[in-house]
Image 1 (cartoon, one colour):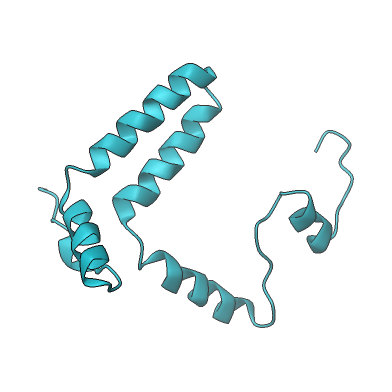
Image 2: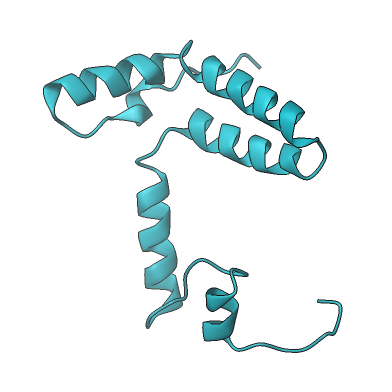
Length: 104
């Protein structure tokens, strides 16, 4: 970014600027990615984003502590129980049914 040099999509992936490239129809690929994301725990995804964002602001020791707090918080929700039930039953978890509506 400091040199303003343009890179190809393949080079962007190789150097870590992007983690995947569309292979064919971008809408189809975007929907496939969305399909993957909706099978995962939303609170866990949000915790990952918060931990990554904090990593830019906190020293490593504080960042590790914050990440541990986020991780511990994930075990208090219904999704943790669903994940354990699914693991024991050897099935994919259904996190969508564990969503609790937020008060208005």
